[in-house]
Length: 147
Image (cartoon, rainbow, N blue to C red; front, side, top):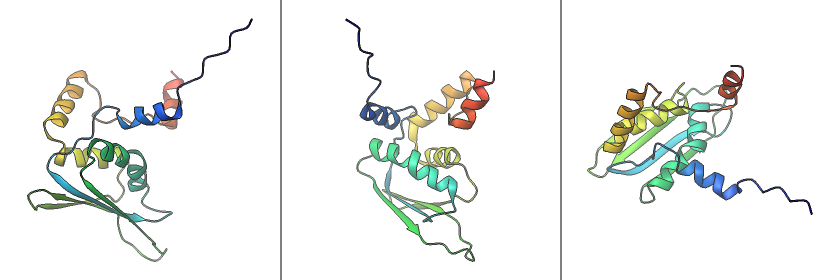
């Protein structure tokens, strides 16, 4: 009797793996995050941040209030995506996300509110000679498959 091939990882296990991948996106002292971006056809770095990193931040910080404002942007309008942080002590900080990659947005957010675990992660990566945040996408996999 022929053996059946083992099924691959389930969809749920892949989602959980993406939510818990290193570095853990724990934010210290943040009460609210507000992301404002165009509904479509612009603000690509902010859009990728929304898709790739905001779910990880939500998973690691279930008590933080996260608001996403997707606004209609006409071709003749010129405004930039923004990220607002509101801290527990009342401080507020905003980030201009114009022409930034999602990994740069994530790193800037974590540099602001990542705490000791983020500082430790950065020093470990620097000691190993590795980038702090690395995205392995289709383009990078193409580059590395050529070697």
